[in-house]
Amino acid sequence: MSPDNRQTHFGFQTVDEDDKAGMVHGVFSSVASKYDVMNDLMSMGIHRVWKDAMMDWLAPRPGQRLLDVAGGTGDVAFRFLNRAGQGSQATVLDMTAPMLEEGRKRAEAEQLAGRLDWVVGDAMALPLEANTYDVYTISFGIRNVTRIPDALAEAYRVLKPGGRLMVLEFSQIPNEMMQKAYDLYSFNVIPRMGQLVAGDRDSYQYLVESIRKFPDQETFAAMIRDAGFGQVKYRNLTMGIAALHSGWKL
Image (cartoon, rainbow, N blue to C red):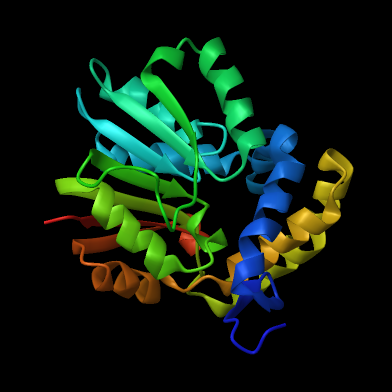
């Protein structure tokens, strides 16, 4: 390791910042084909309820343009297009091409392919023009970004004035005893489930650890404000297992 390299976390490991993106890419390339199945198993299907809650708060409108970052297989983009209706468009950006390929297959099956663009890119350096999108979403992806402030700055850049940021991410349960029970489940059940279903224990061990390293609700809200967003609010979901954060480019 060079002494000049800044360090970050990869789950509970300490790694060079330059190495993290490649390591995260490896995780999601490994789990791409089983990602949706594993999300259902890990959350007992509740992640679908959380994404619907995200759309309820977002209230998509006809003609809006969405950028869904770390959009993977398109779950959020499909929901957005179905709710927004006529004239709406979505761009799904992800650093992992196999995830996007799974999403393309789903888009064709759901007859949404003509309203979607699929882009391989990095949340910290979006290959997109400024002031372009009405809505920026990122779901269960921002905790995997090496430098979260850089990703939030890029979100602010590509949104139009009056555009909205919405982040869905695992968070912290305010009740200590409930948090301990949830940790017991996460660390003992989810990696084993990953081994059985996806043949990949290590990737799911990382995913559990990455949740624990993510800032709590108030700390993350402050990061969003620091990026320039106004009217920043959040809502806890399922007792705080996940949280929705919202902000506006005013």
